[in-house]
Image (tube, rainbow, N blue to C red):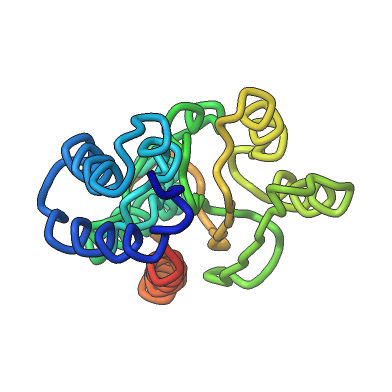
Length: 224
């Protein structure tokens, strides 16, 4: 009986044909047929199994990135509701993303962002900048250094919810449930008292904020 290596090229040709003709089969059936193709050249079951990579993954051209868009704030506190409004409108434009809101505590993201390729948090801020100003902060998920903490400290002081996203991110990393990427988009607000409706400058900033969120979503999808 010739050694398996002597028939290696023929085995590879047969495997290629089996896979090309069997893409509609489920993984278990396709793997079994590949093993049979190897055994046509070598009846040894062990050789058939070791020649065929049993732990394989079918390439999926249809995969889309998991994107979570979280809106913080209450629509009953005027400009405080802009985060939820922007997040919801952005997700409506890109159906492959997932909307979470209205949130008031970053701990609510636990369980929602598990396994996400990108999480976008949208919130009203109060930093002293001109009303309607947009600010974008990206937190380095892999390296939660002092720089990341400083960036969040600035966001936390100006956010209307005192976001402790880095603290929650650290917790998520500890249990292996952190997203791969985290972006914060803040919209400078003016009125945060009780009542409905956005101030004029904040309302005018909504389309640009939505466009920015959509841009991040599409960028993530193109890299999936």
